[in-house]
Length: 91
Image (cartoon, rainbow, N blue to C red):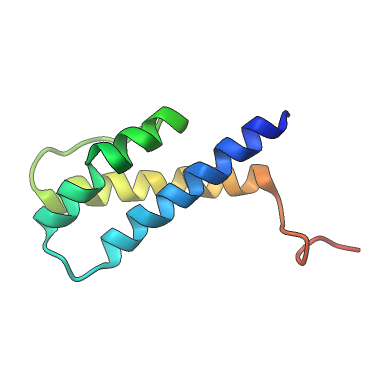
């Protein structure tokens, strides 16, 4: 794989961390929804890697839960591609 793919994965993980930060905040579900599904986060993530999830379209909380759950799953897969960090690699 080219270095560009690894850079793309790192950018996606960094954006995902912002989504997780918003999700973990004390903000209202509506505010979280507005931030997570804003052009700055949602579209930027979608341009890096497609995040597929079933949108229940029933409430801000359920939509966020579905999106964040799918994003966590995708991030887990992307972290597997990157492999362990230097301190975690066997010598």
